[in-house]
Image 1: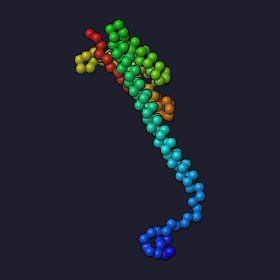
Image 2: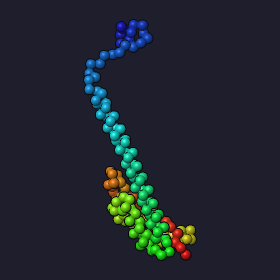
Image 3: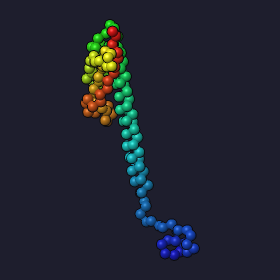
Image 4: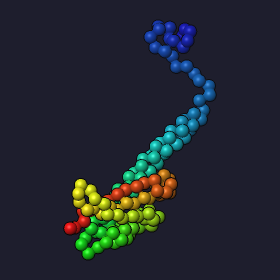
Length: 140
């Protein structure tokens, strides 16, 4: 064997002996495990945020359509939206629901707006950061 751990024929390097490798597999496992856990939890949280947003959009649109019926009022749209959100998510997400009549492209339209917390850790997050709207044409 020559210098630098190379076999004398010069083609194949000889394995260098390292004295202090004990326990390195445990450290690697913990570091990679923590990184993968963080990555997985981030994906789960993003999925939860998208679920909350889609649920709020659906509740706002359903409430707007309900309030646009000929025998209903914007107050009915608000209460229906809050009821749907409370059943699907949590009552805290339905605290700020408004309904207004607007004109869009010359048509009278009922607009239901929901301002809810943006879930950052689980369902907990800063209030009124997530805003969604639902629309429905009013008769007449």
